[in-house]
Length: 152
Image (cartoon, rainbow, N blue to C red; front, side, top):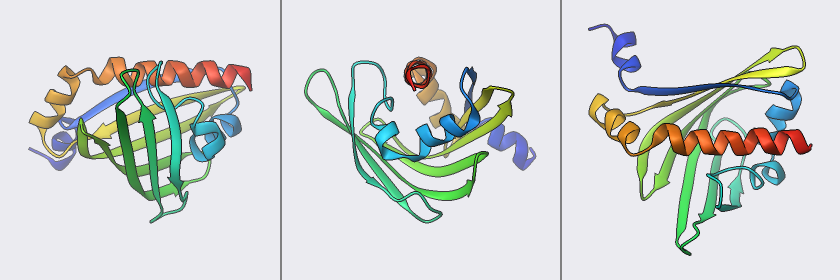
């Protein structure tokens, strides 16, 4: 099996078009004051603990769940191409660990095409994450991002 197919078998992807210019979508992903307003599924409040947006820089967010428990998300940026691409490691404790997020943005007139991929360590882990609600969880988060962008 080729390495590309092997990566495909470990990757879950969501695509969406935001009705917002690429600069605004980029800022929503890269500036803590924006991130705190949309990151996480509906009903979760997010606090940005750390956000060092540069290659090698780390990020850490705490999300308050409706039941009062705290959910920690953190990672380290490995690639940043302004207005195009963000790649970061990610741990979402206690549910998902050791994944890599790929955020791709493409200008489409006044809209922004968005591709979000999560690469997992193994095909089995990828399937488990899909069954645990990957598409619903991230889909809800990106619906929230879309609503937030409309208010800006």
